[in-house]
Amino acid sequence: MASASDFAAWAQQDLVIPFGGKTYRVAPPDVDRAGKLLACAIRGEVNLGITKGPIPDEVQAVLDTIGPDEHPALGDVHQEMLDDKLSPTTIDRFTYYAVFYWARGEEYADALARLLFMPRVTDDNLFPDKEDEAAPKAS
Image 1: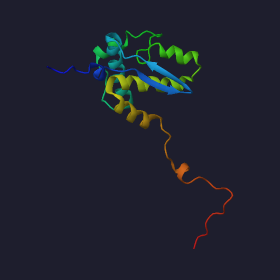
Image 2: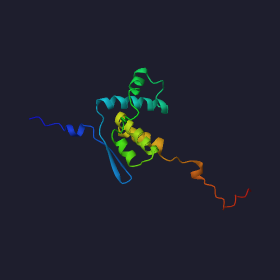
Image 3: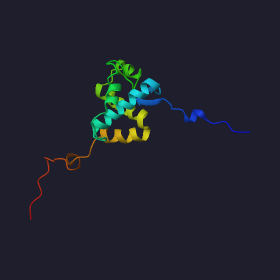
Image 4: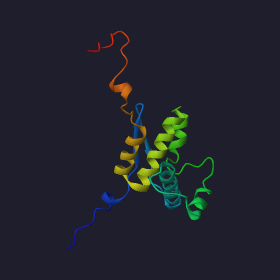
């Protein structure tokens, strides 16, 4: 007797975004959204310099079909975030994450988000000015 395959384990699950005491759940893309997400991912990678441009005409044609009120990465959750008064920057970052989550997978989206959105260590972080301390004396 053959064992049953666990198709639920293979199926794409919701993207879960916990933020500000609320959990947003983005449903996996349908066929139409998936094509648009792949086109958005290509544009994103070209814009970030990950992939050399220009954007192919066929991809641009798909991008041109995305209406101004259409949000293939977040779907209805985009409006929910607007209704909850999240900042445009926060929504844009979640959108960028969602594009790459659906197009390239969680690990890729996580790595890219860390590179793009994590605070960077700078000389100012490592060596803050201490106006109250005297400058070291030269020998």
